[in-house]
Image (cartoon, rainbow, N blue to C red; front, side, top):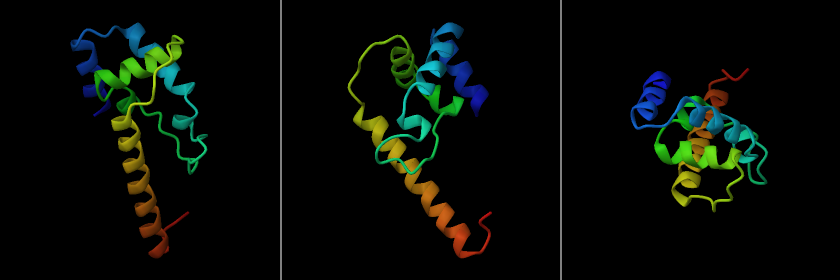
Length: 100
């Protein structure tokens, strides 16, 4: 899945430098590092997320390059849904006594 995401963005014309800048931009984003004010501490920095689509690559790349962009409501909703699913799974594991 990760390889396909990376290869897909390269086929779209993003350069390896664009992807590297996007990774750096993700690392500089408090929300993705689990530091947002409403964050539950979960980190969202997987290369599949960064390269999921061109919009993500551009958003993170621009963050690294200092371009101020308003938050993308679709992206924020996507992250919120991923967090919700992870919390539900964690709760399910705890209810089964399988939590570490």
